[in-house]
Length: 326
Image 1 (tube, rainbow, N blue to C red):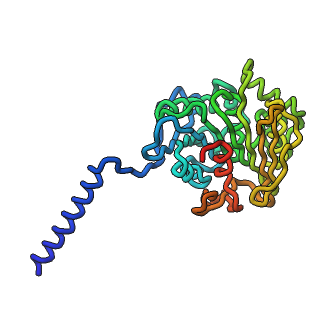
Image 2 (cartoon, one colour):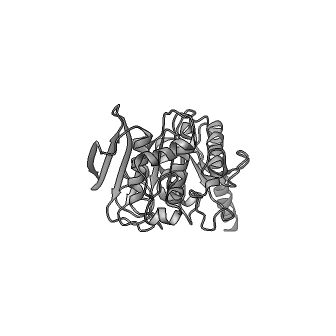
Image 3 (spheres, rainbow, N blue to C red):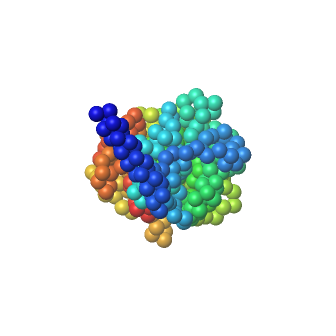
């Protein structure tokens, strides 16, 4: 009996060893990708941390998405909750996930309202730009297909990156965020968030143009998602984002398309050449957060959690489709 048990143990262990060796030696065996931290990506004047997700076997020449978390969040939680990591596997692109540090902001918010962090070549904006350069070099990504998006404070920093480094980004997606220079226009980040700033479209556009003096374009296109019941970042900020970026693109503020997507009001604004330059989604009844639609369907992505409400529309999916990622 003892010899039989020993023989069985030996057989099981030998079988496991053979299976492991076969998996290891088989050409082309895929390994599961995971979030990894990258250090030494530049001078990092904003003292941020860089994380990234690269699907296994990703070929050269693929797009890069920069995804910026909201306050109290971190890179890993935002990458999963928003659905960006899920879509990276589905469609084949890499994701850069900057992470704030509590030493910069006690609530882990990106400092979209601090002058030293929202100017080209300075602070957090410069750190994120350095992450983009490092990622493109490491994965041989397509420099013409880099996109930036974020939630709340990450949405505010998305507008910062679009304004200060427009040559690096083909498009941006702001979720419950704020226009560039809003805190300065309103005199306070809280006035900006809760009330909004009084600016004409040209005044809003001038703030973007001043962030990159002498730059003649092309400018990133913009998509905005905003909950109508958001009491943290009031819906007026989506209107102001629309005014700012239509003006930058030389478009008027009259929607060329007004329809619904998944039952929610959706508008498209086109430039004089007929190109869609600003797109807005007004998520009826949603509070502060990033829209998700968990599931395995072709249009579904994301995971329900704090600031990730299931509204049967996944913002990351809509952005990815608009950007030609999938």
